[in-house]
Image (cartoon, rainbow, N blue to C red; front, side, top):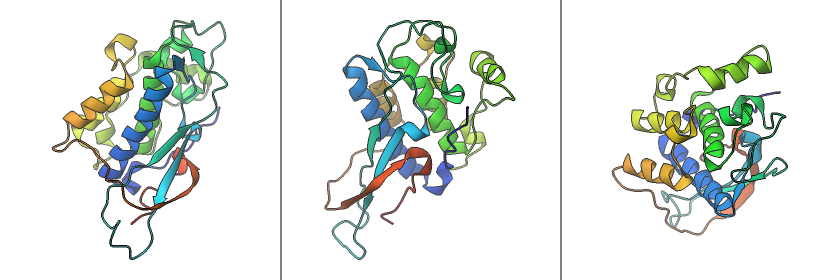
Length: 217
């Protein structure tokens, strides 16, 4: 299966990336609160509406404007704690180990896939590649990815560690919920993330892998 060609996060910078990351996590928190697991998180299944700030507007200049995420394509979604089934469902490059093994899936399964997406978005490359689906699956099951901060200077080591923890092989070793990831991100910042609400229009929905980052700049 084709990877979804996410753009390297260095094009938007650390602050933009963190705000985007947390916005997507909040969307994930919402669907998990409804008892669902998406099971096919990848760049093309996360749409972002970036704010479009009027040029020369002093009112919004410099404001932290929150990206607006939308998770799409729930065709593979399951109720939390269902078994994955005999067939492997999802997109090869983003699939969690327990899905490959046909074990129970829950919100931590989505956190793994989102960790892979964020790894790709920050580094510009996938953590596991291969000449066949089997080789990629082996990477998910057995190999440890290189830390994102070794490939992207703009990512601080604590944020790199958060992404890697989302991608732990065993669900119990990952964060247990999207809000736990958000709390961990805020714990690495001098000032916890908040967005000031300013007047701005919103652009078109764009797949995460093609998100232009700072249209408001």
